Image 1: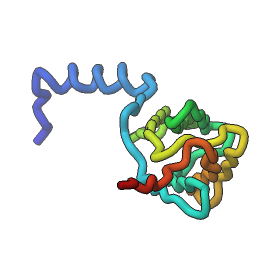
Image 2: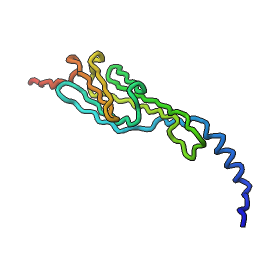
Image 3: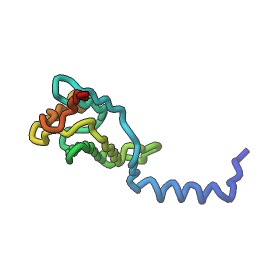
Image 4: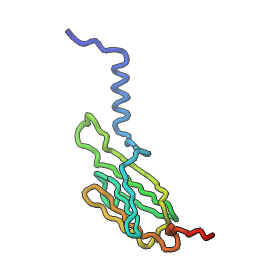
Length: 133
């Protein structure tokens, strides 16, 4: 017995074909991040699986750290059945607990984890103030 075509089946197939060539943007999605203080340095570890070092941008302004990453994949050969990896963009910003020296920032990408090491500035470090009587 042949399957009867529903009125919206044709429309649905047309819409799928129309959108399969458009890049999928994923902004606002987060990625896990750890920030810790260690011997006058702030250390950031961010999971960035699938990104290459030239696809990641890091900026530091005063006590704000921003990490952005963007990648696009090669167009697939053949007719895709599912394609979620066309375009990905993630961005997060963090207020740091203290000011850092922007010249001291070092970053490396290793096994899908971005490691950022930043030295706190002497003048901006938190200092305990003794209250006198």
